[in-house]
Amino acid sequence: MPTTPLVPLCLAPLLSLVPLAAQGNFLLQRATTGALGDVLQFQHTGVPQPFLVLGASFTTGTTPLPPELSNRPLDIAPPSFLFTEVVAAPNGLTTPIPVPNNLLLAGLTIQWQAGALPGTTQLFDALSNRTTTQLAQPLVPTQLPATTVGRAWAARIRRPDPQGGPGTWLFAGGALRPTIQQQPLQTSEVFDPLTLEVTAGPLLPDDVYAMTTTELLDGTTLLTGGVTTLPANPAQQDATDGAVLYEPVANTFTAMPPMSTPRFLHAAARLPDGRVVVVGGSATADLSAPVLLTNSEVFDPATRTWSPGPSLAAPWFWGALSSLPNGELLLHGGLVLTPFGLVPAPICQRLLTGTGGSLSWAPGAPMAQPRVAHDRGTILLADGRLLIAGGCVGAMFGGVPVLMGTDAVETYDSTAGTWTAGAFAPRPLFSGTLDQLPNGVVIATGGMAGLLAMAPVNTYPLNDVLQWDPQTGLWQQLFSMQQPRMLGGSATTAEGLLVLLGGQVVTSGGPSNTTVETLRTW
Image (tube, rainbow, N blue to C red):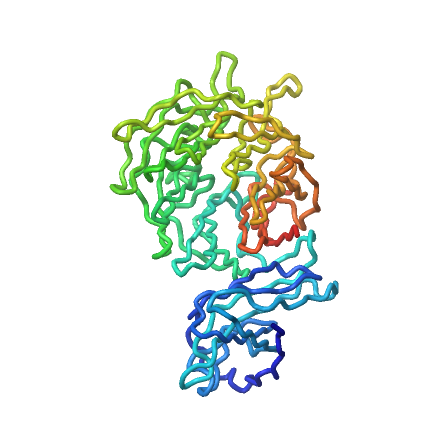
C-alpha cells in the first residue's frame, strides 16, 4: 500500500495556547532502528479505526489542535510532514518509509505521533503516544542528550508497561567518582526506549551503589546490599544490610526489613516460587580486610520478611547466582577462602527446592575456567543456555597475587548439567556490559583492562564493542564507542537498539561518564 504525503498542517499560530495533557490512546512504537539506507517502520496496537495518519516533527512540544480535528493536543511540535496509512487490521505495521543513505542525516532526531481517523464528531478518533527515531549509520555509535549526573555501578531495573508497551528502564543509585574514592548516589534516572530520553526518577531511601537487582513475579524489583554512606563523623562508606523494593506502578522505592548482615559483592536470584535468595559476599567494603560470608537468606515477597537459608561449605563472594529454566539456582565461580588465601574458584553449586519449599545446596559440574567478578558477564540466553563471558582469573605480578581480566568464555546447559568451553573473546571482558538483542546476537561493550590487587593497578577503561554469535559461538570486533565505559549501564529496545549510559573513566580521577549513546548492529 503506498504512503501518500499530505500537505503539512499549519499549526504554528496555535502554539501560544496553554499546553494540554499528554496522549496515548493507542500504542505506537518503532519497528526499525532508523539506520541510514534502511526504512522507517512503526508497530501500532489498539488503533480504534482502520485509518492512520502519521505525523513527524523535528522537535518536541505540545501542539493544541483545532477543535474540528481533536479536543486533544499533539505531543510533538507542529508536524513538518504527514503520511496516511490504510491498515487492514487495528494492529500491525505501517508502510515502510525509505531513509536515504545520506551522511548529512546522521544524528537527526525525528518525533512521531499518529492519529486514528475517521472520528465521530472530530477528525481524529484517538492519538497515540510520542515516539522518537534517531537516524544514524549502522555500526557507528551515535550520541544522545547527556544525563544530569554520571553514575556507575547503578542498579538496572526493568519497568513493565501495563498497557503492553516496551516499558522503560530505571537506573538507581550508583557511584559518582569526582576523586579516587567512590561517592554513592541516592538519585535515579529513567530511560524511555520510545522517546530516547532520560528523565529524573524517584529517590532511594539511602545513597548506595553495587546493589543486587532481582525482578519479582509481580513486576516489583528487590534491591539488596551494596555500599552506602554510614551516619558516622567523619562520614564513612561501608557495606549495607539494606533492602529496598521498587514498585513500578507507584514509581517509588520502599525500605524493606534489613538483611541479617551487611553484604557487598554478594549474589541474589529468584526462585520459581517467587522468593529471593541472597548469598555470600563480604560484610565490609574494605577489600584489604574482607569479612567473608558463608550464609544465605531468603526474602518472601508475600510477607516481606527474611528467613535463614542454607549455608555454603566455605566463605564465598564476587561470583554469580543465576536462575535457570529448570527451576534451579546455579552459583558459579567467585572467590573462596582456602589455606592459600582467597583464590578464584571453578566451583558450581546448585540450589535445589525440596518438600515444603526447603532449600539445599548440591554440587554441580565445575566451570572450565576458575573465575571471579564475572557477574556482569553472565546472561541467560534466549535458547536457555547460560553464557559466561570474561571476568577475572588469578595471576602473580611482581610476586604479589593479583586478579586480571580473562577472555575465556563458556556456556552452561541446565538440562545436561554441563559446561562447554567456547571460543575466546578478542580481549578480556571485565566490568563492561553484556546484552542479547532481539536478533539473538550478544553485544559486549567497554569494561576495564589492567590488574586488580587490593586496589586497581594500571587499570584503564575500554571503548570497544564486541559481538558474539550464539549459533557459531564466534566473536567479532565491531567498532569503538564514543566514550570509554566501565561499570556502566545498558538498555535494549524492541527494534534492536542498544543504549549505553554512564560508567566510569578510572584513569582521569574525574566524574563518571554522563554521555548516552546508541549502537545499531544491523
